[in-house]
Image (cartoon, rainbow, N blue to C red; front, side):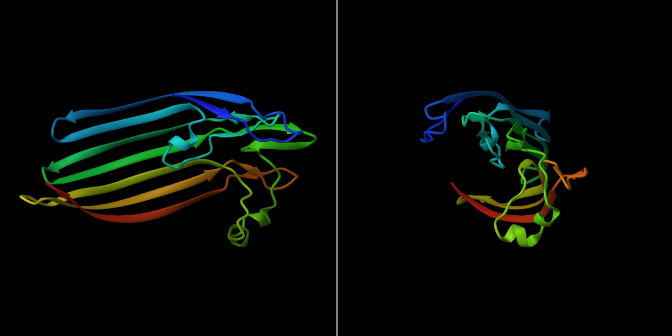
Length: 205
């Protein structure tokens, strides 16, 4: 995949107007029948520059460079899993996937700019009150999810097919590490969520 990023910001103090940056990436995907009609293995991935939004998590693609130009960031995503066909009407699956990006930062005038900077952070900024105010003092680095679920074909006949599905997922979100104080020490902001999802689908003939 080849992408182009255009800088269209019009300001006399910004040299990026009319500039363009190119980014390239490669992807793959495959489904392997480990045991025909019984066990399938699937794997897919994407890696390169400016691929953030192409992952399920839609992370950032680019950041602002030293001259105001859009600078694509390197990243990737992968998904792998197994599907067990217990019987023609019942499947069990387990998947794991991850999206991530590498930051791009630079220094100017004693300040750090870009995305994913290990900047000085006030621990008080990482509070629920700060989050509710819409203040986000950190940049996302990766999102990982593990899932386990099943599909049951409850009905299949003249009128079509009805399927019932249940899935459990554990999703973790990690930000870039930040310094906790000017005297050293750092920590990596991280949070997670557990979800149980249900679905009922009808496929007409």
